[in-house]
Length: 329
Ligand code: TRP
Image 1 (cartoon, rainbow, N blue to C red):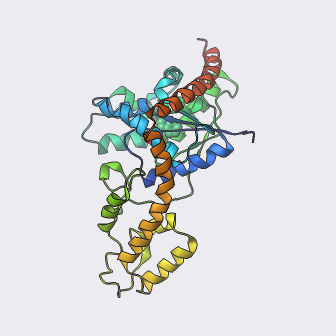
Image 2 (cartoon, rainbow, N blue to C red; image 1 turned 180 degrees about the vertical axis):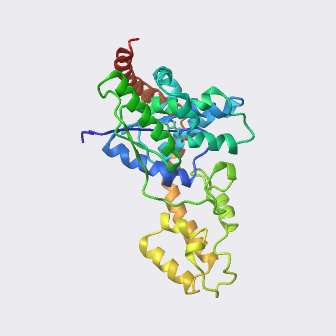
Image 3 (cartoon, rainbow, N blue to C red; image 1 turned 135 degrees about the vertical axis):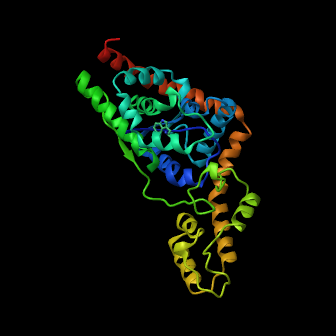
């Protein structure tokens, strides 16, 4: 199939991927690789904007992330998998775009303000953190994509990317850098084990690489409907922490049965968790098998990245010669 549309996206290598990453973003990537020319990269420079003081884990996380991606179904034959810092053109474009980006745009970015306030264990007063969205705009605009598959939390950054593209085209004429749209995954609700957002920092996640014994432990401790104390009490799936996972992993029929069993007090929470564990295992097994192939062959991870880096660089070089020409450098 010839692929007419182009897309690009990235993730910061901050740790192992969990179900929230899968259902929020990765699943979308896996589907897109078949229909679009797709570039997916490990945003290691972006990880440094906040983890600059202790970069020791970034290197290992990069390889782990590639394994998670391939496990989840990204196929290096169908898409380009690369590492941001291996394509130095991203830094050059980021520098050039910073010339045309007002500081006020960066300072009023809601994500920037929010993280400045919320993250207290790291000093985020560095210029690199303020310029995070400029680098992200460079990552994206480099590939002149029509859309970018991201989670909702990235929407402010996407808006800035569009504003920067618009300003570039206005200043230098033409439409070299088209304004890309955000491609959101149709609302997938995947809360953490405790009902808050699934996040590594809350320690409430089920990771794609977790083994079933660990997962059983995690699921055993999960709250369901807190008002339901006995099986003979009717439960309410709409306030249950577990039910959203059934929506993601169980067939429509099974979901209906579970809902009926819960509200009708015939299916207890322990049995309901058993159904979940069975479906989760069926879901994770093929992912973990694909991942295990890479665990057994670490050189393959390097090979995937080397091949992807080269393909990404070839595209990036083309964009950069056009950008340089426009900006007279
Ligand atoms: N900001 C994104 C995140 O936190 C990572 C990222 C960096 C990105 N550059 C990008 C995502 C370009 C999409 C496109 O997950």
